[in-house]
Image (cartoon, rainbow, N blue to C red; front, side, top):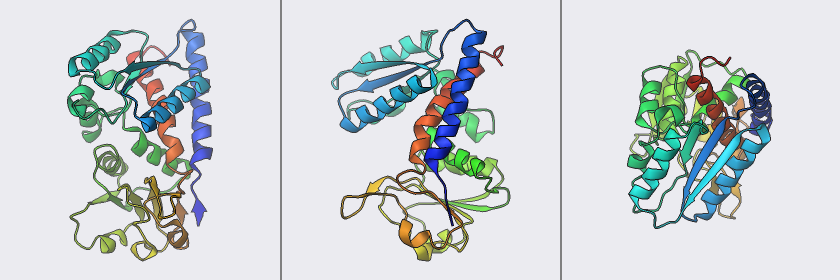
Length: 286
């Protein structure tokens, strides 16, 4: 069994992004690539995530801007900020930090983001490009999973991939990315009959459901690759994933730990997507 080290891969990819940004700055007279984050309200977890994103931008030499709005902001006020950033030439990409306060429509506001600046892959425009096999900006966590598989040279073509979870942010785009790599993909969810039996068929088992230690050793085929996207707390309050790591690790060929597996890749993919968005917007830059 080999542990897939997300911290190692993330660091390598960030260094690559940093070098590319430095080269672009030299080519275009020092103009920086810019990421804007809109934060509505004072959710503590969201504030931590936003700080991590700002720090990552600084690390690779990318300009970042935080647009902070009060929790009681109206739909029209948030929409106005999105439209302003859409029109701002200094902003390459933007994200609307989720979750939003309950009175605001996430779907409607996200879809106001210009698709070419949607570095979180959440607008219907970018999702449509992914589903039709075109170049697209993909949701950061599933994209991070794919980069991990690629870094470790894990074969995908012809393999049976089982994705447990069908969320719009992880499960669905991950299934499509695996399908685009010629996997045979099965998506499982809360209504799947005999989920354990389906999971045991997987050459590559990806789990993203938010249930601590849900996947146990009896659900995993010998030699399978196991990707744990979960971030949970066990009965002792200790950070863990959706996979019972201790028992499953003995059966699989590769496994991601929690923490230190998929988690570090998410912010790295955000800055990578922002670089890709810049290159799509500026095709003369190479």
